[in-house]
Structure formats: structure tokens, C-alpha cells
Image 1 (tube, rainbow, N blue to C red):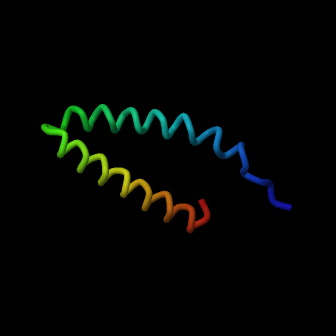
Image 2 (image 1 turned 45 degrees about the vertical axis):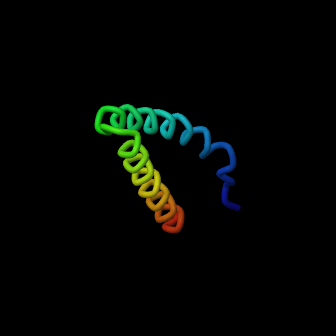
Length: 61
């Protein structure tokens, strides 16, 4: 039988997601000139990230 990816897969993803979000957040702060730009850039990033994760999930990764 296949091995369940319960907590094993989640343990590796959390640090990478945290540091990735920290890196993106710091770069957004330096690029955005106003709160509106910060929200638009952040929302676009999160939408793209969600789309990428969905495509990878559907692809079996």
C-alpha cells in the first residue's frame, strides 16, 4: 500500500512556506508605494501561488 503523506509532507512545507512568505512580504514592502499597491501586489501573488499549488496538486506532486 502507498504511504500516507499526513504529517510527513506537512512538516517540510511549513518552514519553506513561512520563509517564502517572509521573503515576499519584505520585497512587497520595498516595492509598494501605498497600501493599495501593497494589497494588489500581495493579492496577485497569493492568487498565483494558489493556482500553482492547485496545478501541482492535480498533477500529482
